[in-house]
Amino acid sequence: MHAPRTRVQRRPVHGVLLLDKPLGFSSNAALQKAKWLLRAEKAGHTGTLDPLATGVLPLCFGAATKFSQLHLDADKTYEATALLGIKTSTGDAEGEVMARCPVNVTEAQIAEVARRFTGRLRQLPPMHSALKKDGKALYEYARAGIEVERVPRDVEIFELNVTLAPISNGGRAINIRAKCSKGTYIRTLGEDIGEALGCGAHLTALRRTETGNFDLSCCVTLEALEAMTESERLACLLPVESLLPDHARVMLDAADAGRFLSGVRRRGPWPDAPQVAVYGDAPHALLGTGHVMAGELIPGRLLSPPEIKQILEYLESQP
Image 1 (cartoon, rainbow, N blue to C red):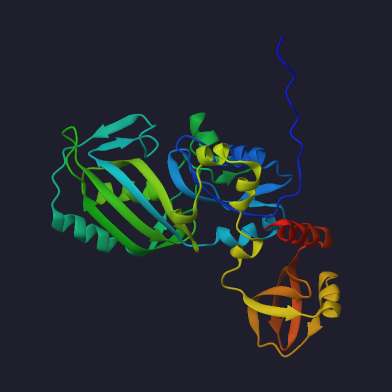
Image 2: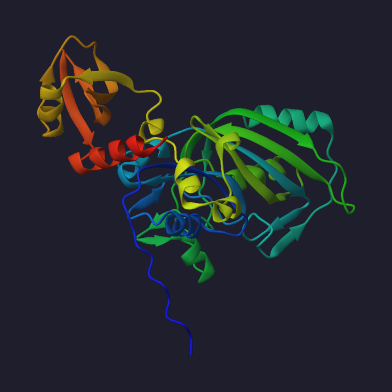
């Protein structure tokens, strides 16, 4: 007989974990593993990374999930490798080979293509993507052999560096580094660059190195997280306000803080600001977000009093 499974005792956990997502894991699978390791009650991520991709995946716990939507809009930076001369059904190494073409490219052609794909572009979302139509991910339709109509989307490549990679096993590849807007498909970018070079291409590796103000230097792997003690895992969490780096700060006294948390607008000497992070001064604690218009502080997303209390109790418990 199998031994009964031990039930994990969940608890309130608040903060942001920067995970270096491993190869082969879906974003949700990585999230659930981290949630289990932290014994967290509530968790979410700030946008998916394909199983093929590795790299920066911010995971939000507890009160941080209220602000995860803000990070979906953040700019991203990716590093990728694309094999030239082979087109696949998925645009990556997991698909079937659809065509093979000879590769005759020069450094000058590579440089010209990089210039052409820098700036504003219109991309057609790939069928093998997590984008949803009628409640189903496009990749579910693709696996069933169904192709659905998709609407091209406007994206922007702020910086693009493309170089020829060293020859490996007789094949030619390019290395791509792209800083781009939300919603950019690097698989599609790799395919489009291959088409522009006249030989086609598909991605063989993809790594996200930055998202918003977060980069790989602050990330932890699942393997490292598993090897830690429970207190060490909690110490990896960044504070909730790390999701609000571009928000102006507003400080409220105890009376105004209580009213703000009840959703009541406050008046004060603050300049107009589209995004503010609001704090209480005694004790010092993040209360939520809002915006200021004509001297009036208008509440947006608010933490609950229990969440604030739990965060303060954890901070007080630390040496």
